[in-house]
Image (cartoon, rainbow over all chains, first blue to last red; front, side, top):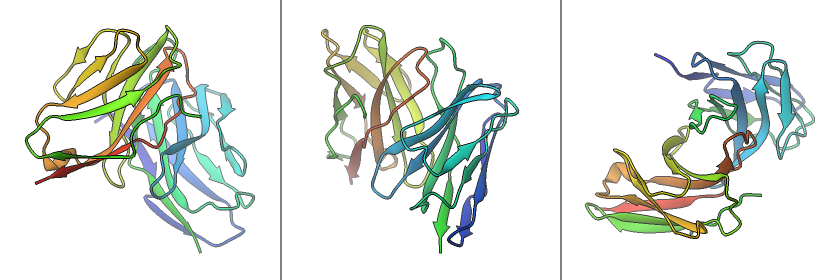
Length: 114
Length: 110
């Protein structure tokens, strides 16, 4: 089945460690996104990518990094510079370009910093 | 910042229609209205979108006012499974910086 797969679903990390969250899609979508969600809050945009080898910062990019070497993959690294990394992270994709289609979301990765 | 304003929470009796409002007074002519919902600890799910005409699909109806400054999502016969946070967003067709607000938490009461 087509869709977006995020892994791991749960992740624990010690302070000062970098961690990479995986996001893979087999929908042949050009655009991919990373959002962060804190308890009781909406989604905040971290990074987004419209095409391979290109990405832009969202509203809260500090302390995060991404890469887009392949169309189907958009991994997010939470670096030690991120001051409060404990959160629920959501990856999404869409057809992109002039399409008015919807975002497809993964099931999320919950990161806890110990 | 999000371009939409929604009430933080609403209640609806099971079996009744749930009407969720959204204000988007600064919407521009080429911006679409989208609705998503998020059931606890899952990824958001697309519901419906529209530009200026009312839209209906198997999940819901979207009513957009003539001036396009507000819209209403209608779930015609709410069930307990419709309990979720509902997000209204506006975006242009080629806008990849898609911003979500805090949404409306809908409680369906048995």
